[in-house]
Length: 242
Length: 138
Image (cartoon, rainbow over all chains, first blue to last red):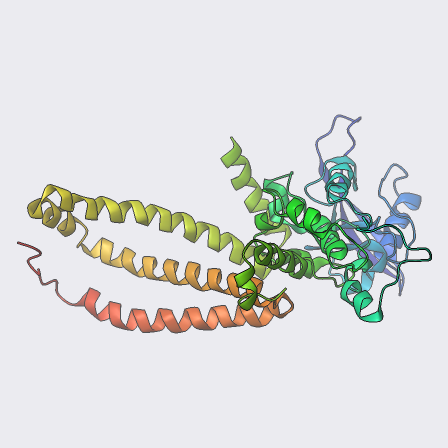
């Protein structure tokens, strides 16, 4: 057992106080995750402490937050790997509702804007859609995104421009563009080539660094850029890699 | 107000994401603004050529002072940083090598260092040498 200091962001719109940090001394045990430590605070110190969580195994993406200088999932962060005082903040670029809970609506609105569902180009086949192993491998990477919001929080472009689609939405856009069963690639490319799409990305690489699933939204955005460029100027095929 | 909002946020972004990418993005923006400022100064000097040789020589000699020679060192570094970083981003996009970000950063630093050392080794002796008026156009 080891006592560690936690500095946690607190904000309650009802109590009239400004946002502030509150310090807690948490008794940690070996193998304790950050999420368990947050639950410990809620159960033993302050029952009004609010945060989001669900699956506890890095599958639902609810518990993404800013932990000691980087974004990540609380449930897959070991407390003993963190340097005290452990500073916890909510996700940036989204409005704080209470403590570590943010309003994810703009985040999911951006996601919906890229039409995140299959739009088949032809009539549905009699049985299921066929996809070869090679074609499936093309989207292997992108389907793993759990929509936790770490990339969106870490993206400085999302701060300056709330209309920017964000790394999560653009990664998912590539997931459908690369899908052999999808027939709306042109429509999607036109959508992400807009003012608030891929060309707003400044290639800062924060999204790639923080992604808890080790995905590469920066690479997805550059791939989309190349696809758009080749669609508009076919001769560019010799210069860019799509 | 909007500009103030963006600048305030940039400070916060640097604090919350202390990554190499955030710093290079910040430097790229700052050097871009400095280059814009330089561009106008540059045109202000060159534009005087429209008013004849006399005016041009006069304005050119105004920027041939030790202060401006010192600023020229900064200008060279600003140009090289903006150029090398911009080229690396273009290369990253075109060749789709985003997974090799760390190697790219190392390459940017190395190329920047080589360019800076070569150009400074040419510039510094000239700056500290006594100023010889060339006479200009007249």
